[in-house]
Each structure stands twice: as structure tokens, then as C-alpha cells.
Image 1 (cartoon, rainbow, N blue to C red):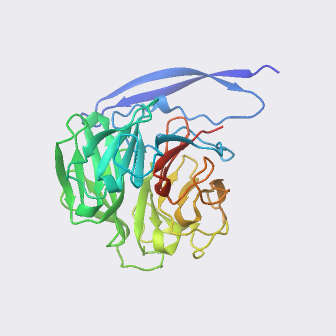
Image 2: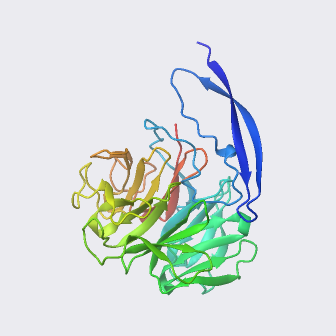
Image 3: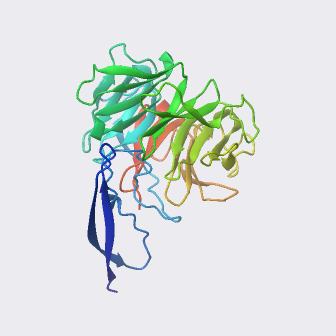
Length: 353
């Protein structure tokens, strides 16, 4: 059977967020269909000069996408330690457009990068007393900026990719667990102690509460232990509500959130989560959750009452198809899934099929 082909011309706009300059252009793609239909997300058409949340920039994934059950160790996996082939509690992950992997290496008090094709890592921030238990990281190459949740020092800092010793505090007094950036360049920071997420314009001293902020609790307008956070292109905020065993979605300017995963108590049923840690969301609104104490990665289709186990059906362990307390998630451009496998001191890559 020969594949059918369709030529599609797509109009695009090159947008520079620094100067607001726009340049129009178009690209032509040949799309092939063979046996099944693929949903195609043209990542190269979106040419914003700012690197935003890696998950937002991931390949377009359809509702039936599956990933290989056996992961590939791409960083660490050699026990806890501070060597260049070791990690010590890997936490937040970020995958850049060039597939460089950035890792918040919490107990080594550093941010490391792992370039494609390499197994060892290089330090790009910390490791010299500047950071204390960093839990998340995002990278904006266009502005030579690395934004870090410096959890133990109760702040968010900005470092330089070109100079790892250059570091400035941009938000202080926040017990940050997660952060992300939207397409407009606003930072979203979860505050574990205040049980809230705030949106910050870089350089401002005051943020705006966009989720929680009403004390610890399980009401729709409350959070209890805010962990990692994700923002979509509509500026809806998804936040891991750790002690409520759920993931909440707060639409832009909403006064309360809705449950999009879990929320039925602590447990291991497909309708439950057990102390979740991280969340990412694809272009269809499908939610992916690092379900920490269930040692699995869950997928919740939009509006579903139950999730599906993507990774970790074989229980806790150190085999290539197992996890042990996953803490971080990220996609790359191709839709491959990266998992910070905390207690195995490694990052696993699960390839999309």
C-alpha cells in the first residue's frame, strides 16, 4: 500500500518579543498518511525567539500515542553522587529546542545540562555554594537566562548560560517548588508554604495570585502543598496539589480551579493519585502526571474520570521499565518523555512510538 500525500502551505509569523517586530513567511509541507492518521504539530512554524516551557513546545501528540515501556538512562544511573556521571535527587527537568536536557540536581545543589548523545553532564549553575536544594529549572536561550527554583534559599534566581557564576535573585521570600514561563515571558511560580501560584513579570517586585492563595485546604479555591506547575497558551495554570492527591486547572482570572486528575483520595486506583509531584499538558489538553508514591506516570485525557498508566506498570524498582519516586517530567520536540527518577538517581527517556 502506497502512502497518500497532501501538500499543505502554512502561513507563519516570526515574532521578536523584545522589539515586537514581525515578519511573515510560509512553509510547505508534504503530509503522508499510511494505515493511520497522524496529527501533526508544526513546531518549526512557531518561531518565537523566546524559549518557553518545553512541554508547550513538544511535538503534537494524539490521544492514542504510546511510549516504549523500557526507558533509556540519559543522565545519572550510577548511584547518588556529585560526579559528572551521577545525580543526587534529580527534580525538575527542562528540554530545550536542541534537545539539551537541563536538570535540577537537588542534593548536589546545582543545575546540570546533558547534551544530546552524551551521558555525562556539565554544571551550568551552582555546585559552589550558590544554590541550596534547587527543585526546578527553565531556560530562555534568547535572553541567555536560566531561571531556577532555589528552594532551600527561599528564592527564584536567574543565572547566565555563558557565565555560571553570574546569578541574581529576582524573587525572594518564596518556598518555590515549580516554575514555568508563558509565551509572553511571564513567570509562574508555585509557593509551597503559601499554597499558591503567582504570575510574575520579570523585574517586578510583586506577583499576581493565579491559583490558590486561600490557605491550605481541599476546596476548589485552595491548594495543599503546591508542587510543579504548567501554563498553557491560554494562560490556564495547572498545578500539582500534592497533599490533596490531585492536579488542578485554573483558567485565566478564575477564582477557583477544577480537578483534572485525581482528587479521589490517596490511592493506587486509576482514578487516584498518591502524592503527585509534576505535571505537563499537551496541545489536546491531556494531562501527564508524575504519580510519586505509586511510582508511575499517568495520562488523563481531557474530561476523563480515570487515568491510564503510561510508565510503571511493573511496580517500583530500578529496571528500565520501572520507576522509584518520579519527581519531574518533560517532553522534547519529538514527543519523547523524560522522567526524573529520584530514588534511582537517574533521568529516563521513554521514546514515543
